Each structure stands twice: as structure tokens, then as C-alpha cells.
Amino acid sequence: MDIESKKKCSELWKMASGDYIAPEDWTESAADELAKFFAANYDCSDAMSYVPKPSGSAPGYFWVVTYVYSVMKNRYQLDHGQTFTACRVVSLSYYRSTIAGQCLQ
Image (cartoon, rainbow, N blue to C red):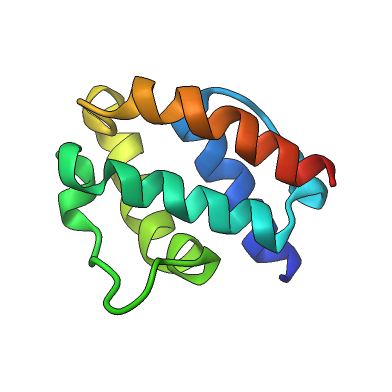
């Protein structure tokens, strides 16, 4: 995972959770958890309807640093209140600890 991908993961997580995890702490497994977080929000968030849904198996970090990053960054800047609507709190309660745990490994 290159440094640009790590920076994008860090920025996305900050937008989604309000928590900061330094780019250098991001691992591929943490980024894959971030992809699961966004996938969990896909069907219940208005903003995620603008992100192309991955085909095939579960999305990985590449989906996050390409598609999710560009769409969410633009939508976040335009209207922070609609970035996550229904599932944000529930998803964060689970993924906040799993993502942080993966970054600490």
C-alpha cells in the first residue's frame, strides 16, 4: 500500500468518524476494514448511492482509495450533513474499534 493510499484512508476515516489515524499507521488490513465500513453504509446512505458499487467479492482498499475517496470527498465538501444518513452511528460502533486495532498492529 503506497503512501497516497494511506493518506486517502486517513482522510476518509477522519471525514467518516471524526477520529484521526495518521497515514503511516494505515495497513492494508485496516484499509480493507475501511472498505467494509463503507460497504456496510452503501445501502442506507444517500451519499453512497453516487459511488459505483463493486462487483464480485467484497470490496477491498483499492475500491476505497479510488471510487469512495473521490465521491465522498466531493460530497463531504458540499454537504457534510448528508455524507452519512441512516447507518453511520451503527457502523461506527463496530468499525471504530476494528479499524483502530488493525492500524495498531
